[in-house]
Amino acid sequence: MNVAPSRAGGGSRVSLGAVSCAFACAALVAALAAAGAMLGDAMPQVSSGGDVLSVAFGDAKRAISLSMVQKADSYFHGGIDMECHEAHGHHGEDEGGEGHGGEERREVSGDARGGFRDPWRWINSRIRAPEVHRHLQGAEAIHTIPWLWASVRADPHNVDAWTTAWFLARNSVKDADLAWRIIEEGKAKNPGSLEILFYEARHVYDSGMGDAARAEGLFRHIVETALARCGGDESALSEDDAWMLKYSRSYLEDIAKKRAAK
Amino acid sequence: MTVFFRQAKALVRLSFLELWRRNDVFGLLILALALMVPLSMATPFGATGASRYLDEVALLLLWGFSMFVSLGVGSRLFRPEFERRTIYPLLSKPISRGCLVLGKFLGAVCASWSALALFYAVFVGSVLLRGGSLSVELAQGVALHFAFVALAVSVSMLGSLAMTPSANLTVSSIALVGMFFFGRRLPEYAGTLSAPLAWLVRLVYAMGPHAEFFDMRQRLVHGWGAVEGRVLAAVLAYGIAYSAVCLMLSAAVLKRKRV
Image 1 (cartoon, rainbow over the protein chains, first blue to last red):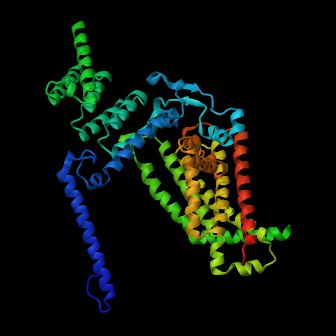
Image 2 (cartoon, rainbow over the protein chains, first blue to last red):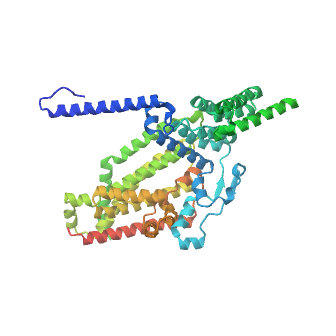
Image 3 (cartoon, helix red, strand yellow):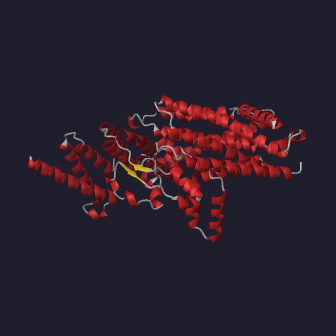
């Protein structure tokens, strides 16, 4: 960049203007970085993490992260956007929750008479709606993972994305190593999350790793941390933490019963 | 008839030269490769074997780029000719205004199709490289995409007779992109509005260019299978009819225009 004064003068003004602009941008970036470092978690609407992008685009990153989880959900349902699908009243057949698996034949909406009433809807329903509602199972479920990966890259504090990725890797893809990598990375990014800790404990306990003692230690740690957070008053716990406390106790009872049975 | 074909051939050749000399297509292709190559090398959480997201992103880029090319080509058909006054020597030739509109449309469509064919060749190449195979629904998707490009050119050409290139590009993009993403939801949206606005939205739904009919991306990505022949025929007929109406309106506007 040329900042030396020129004889014509015009070039010098342009250069000085560019330098001023660069300084202003640098000052803005520095201010954003400082604000991020100072505020930390003091601004819940801004995802913490300290980097400038988190401060400047906190809400946008969160929104992108949530939309990526929705995309993964759509992939899991074979390309159907379930939120949109249910909003249009097509939930009657799907109310089996996690239990409904495999494939279901589905009547495509819009019959012949509907075609005469609204031909555009008739075309749309046949172009954009699958005739079979299915869930991705086995190796096919791996196609959901990139969207969840993108989700946690956009917002590493989206705990739902970490746990969903873990669930799909373990239960659908059936790749325990992948599930373990996900939960470990999630734990590193969210050290205070009881939910991720709970899923780690479940992984250790359920996945046939044969480490009941370690799982018990983790469940016990969750119970102690949750009680410490609320000062013994469980009604003061957040909904998520209350669930984690309840399920951890349930697992601890299960471990104790199995130990007694031995 | 022979004269018309000779005239149309000349106009098609001119459109081809104009598009490929601008190097827009090569720029878009490089941009697509710059986005897709790093994306294809990503291993989310160290997992391998996920490829549907690549197809989805590639098809989205393909649609965006084809819309950019077709609207750009269509919007440059008439207004710049009027501004540069090159329309006068063209009209002094023994060619009717209707023939001029049809010839220019064919030229623009063929030029846009050539760009789209290049994009699809790269896409299909990448699918085959990743171990994928060709399918009936891919052929259907390509056919509908080509029909959409013709529709987009006709909409843009009609706009180029009534607006400046930038205004035309903006209005055509809003109409096509808006219908592409929200077209099928307009009836539900109209149901939530008060009477005059609801009628307006229903009018847009009835008359607007339904770009979403031609979008088979979800079918291709998730393997939903081919659409029924009668549905494919209905969408192609819709594309042809809509383009024909735009062409007739363009010819009528050009005939009434005082040059």
